[in-house]
Length: 546
Image 1: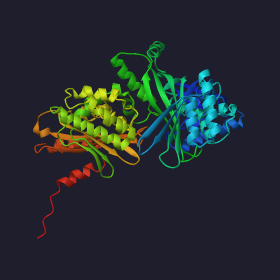
Image 2: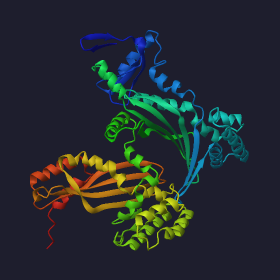
Image 3: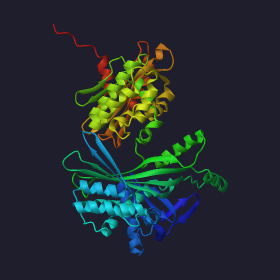
Image 4: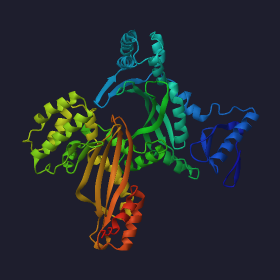
């Protein structure tokens, strides 16, 4: 293989090439030579395939090993997996629409509960509790989960097939994908002590549905290689390299009633953090660098997810829910109204605000949670928030954290989306786009929350009006945006986060030139149909028939 670098010609032996393959990117193919990853761009995916075929054919003709012992395999294959035996194990059981959520921890209890749901024989259940308990007392398993069942003489049934998905070798394709997508950007090393598996059962229907999730953290350094930089500059950059940790999640979802028929596979970076404390300015730059490096595998809505996952005590839910009651609407589709603001819940009227909070929380609990949770809220709310309460926010915080209401309750998970920090990614995105051209400010009192509960999802919408920052009538405009967060019905995962401009308006004196400028700037953010509605709204009303 011949290539040009400056005025020198360099040759690369075919025997040195490893891991030749096309990527998901259109027309791109990659290969390793030694420790270096090379990315080449062909004119099309078809041409990239021809390159891969030609290189591999030449290697075979010359008797070279094709893709054997390549760097990707060494870095993300058996070498990284060595030492992994059995993960920590948890299990959850969701039953809807009753809202029952049970969390099960530990090896013995998790396997025992899985055996019960999978209807394994009773003696299997007893064996798991006994032998699993013994293993937990002895410390970590010294073998794989499946091998442990063999040693415990558990008959090979549905449970055995399920725990085989917890074998460390299952991770190998995922780690190879990480190398393909992030290898040129990051130098990563698995933190093997963080490997965990979670089995999620949904028993709403007569036949169970199950998802098997792997998660593991990696320590990484963002690559800053620059072949044109002088040695001193390169050393300086290496010394100041950004060190991060990121969490990889591999999820298998199976067909109802099956632990083998796979319906969906997801591989994503679901969290990241800086590995070392830095100054606020450096932290901002480091996070931007980390996001850019992790982007190929990051969830598109990761920033929202990171905020929502914070513990309840670290979120301003207690302060913001009371002040956002104005205009709030909670509906269960298609037509059931669970809560609608009637205009009385004002900060100047604490008793009315407390009653509105009670209606909101109990309404959510009745629709989303178990009967026991509803009973707890009904019995505890008044004791924490009597009508004479002066500081509504403080008392609401005490109720949320001390009344016994579980943070895992679906009603609480919904409330964790109703606060100002939740919309920070949306606010930041708009300020880095629209605001740089057309400065604006928020319209006070025009922040609305709408919650929609469907049979298979829960969506929380934040809607806000913004208006021009200056007072010139000829440049007046305002627009309304919406950040919509859609979760699955059991609030286990954030499925999407969308940000759109729903409407925009001008003043009677706004110039045509400024109208065109505003429309052009807002256009990339407009929700489908907004421009058509703008035209429709300006049409003359039809003449009355004579």
